Amino acid sequence: MQLNKKYILSKDFTAKDIPVGSLENMPEKVIQFGEGNFLRAFVDWQFNELNKKGLFNGKIVIVQPLANGMIDTINQQDGLYTLLLRGLKNGKPIETTGIITSISRGLNPYKDWKGFLECAANPDLRYIVSNTTEAGIAYNKLLFLKDECPLSFPAKVTAFLFERFQRFNGDITKGMIILACELIENNGSTLKKYVLQHAEDWDLGADFTNWIERGNYFCNTLVDRIVPGFPKDEIEEITLKLGYEDKVIVAAEIFYLWVIQGDEKIKDELPFAKAGLNVVWTNDIQQYRTLKVRILNGAHTTFTIPSFLAGNNTVKESFDDSTTGQFINEGIFNEILPVLNFPDEMKVEFAKNTIERFQNPFTKHYLLSISLNSVSKYKVRVLPTLLEYHKIYNRLPKILTFSLAALIIFYKNKYSNLDKLELREYQVNDDPDVINFFKDLSNETDYRAVIKKTLSNVSFWDSDLNQIKGLTEKVVEFYKSISIAGMRNAIMEIL
Image (cartoon, rainbow, N blue to C red; front, top):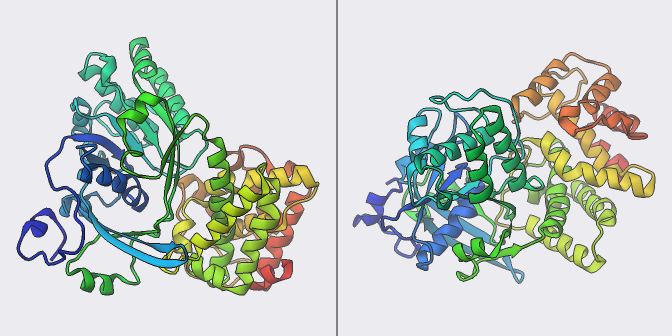
């Protein structure tokens, strides 16, 4: 039997020991851009907890941000899915299972733009949540076509807010609280800037701009939970244990943290703390963000591609492998931590906790999944550390620089193997402009030309990295080493 509301309410439902969220009909209060594993294991789970404790009484309508996605499958299950939370707590393994019921339905705006805009007329709707990856919050000048779904996420938000503004005649009380969960600095503020830019481009009027400013709250947030996603290697065993089929089941670690920068009135509307959830409201999100993005996310991005090309498949395998394990530890403790301006005890403790989370025996966090949008991830998560290290020590950090060379060879050699490097079979997933850039380099045989063109791509890095003293030469050196010796041998050469 496939998981859905009818099945749960039937006598055939035998998983009586699995907690099920509220099945009551509730008003839709949240519109969520993104149907992926992270939001469902993080945000939707937390709203599910609020509903279970009678503190929210609201459901989520999710919007598919890309033309292709999982909305149809989610709707087949009436928005229901199973969440497996597994990890170490005080050194002991813990595993919990629950059925999340906080999603009411899903929409594909590319197929049902009118239905998407109808959500704006819902007086109960109050919150916008999003996670469209780092590449999602980006400005692209687009035409305003009233009956057509725009491609970019900020443009969709602008169109939605303008529709709401019109439906409620500019009522200031019908503004939205926007919780952007993308992993970029000042995610909410950046989204607001692009919304206002689209409003200007589209000549939507001063009254609308004023309504955006006075009635809508764009919160900067920081999210933290490792979400491996669909447990494909265990799905047969898990399905047998559950007694039903769940096509969108999600596995995640136990640890989670949500830091929100917002004023007290917003905090009072969302009683996460009252529900006992690990949500921090703060006036200054920067210290939380820096530790998390530079250490946890920075380490992820640093080792993902080198470890994959060295033969590993998961994060845990990367740590269990003595070669890549040493590579990761040196990167964290010798290159990332030294440039972070925090007390040693604080940053070392965070790093140790991060490594323990990486070593979670339940987590099969696939390296290829983490490699999604690696170019923008490297720019946000790793490049600032590399630049600060170079500035402080007047030399380049070898692990972080090696990782940049590995990234370039990972992208380029997907489309050609002119370097005669034996690569594993894999799929590159990134913005089309990024993929096309490396496709254009596919026939280039000169290492230096490949590196110089990549490092000079200002759209990737916001500057010409060839201007960093010694960086071009070092990346060429590592690129050549990987191409000739293979990834594992190249890693061993630098350790």
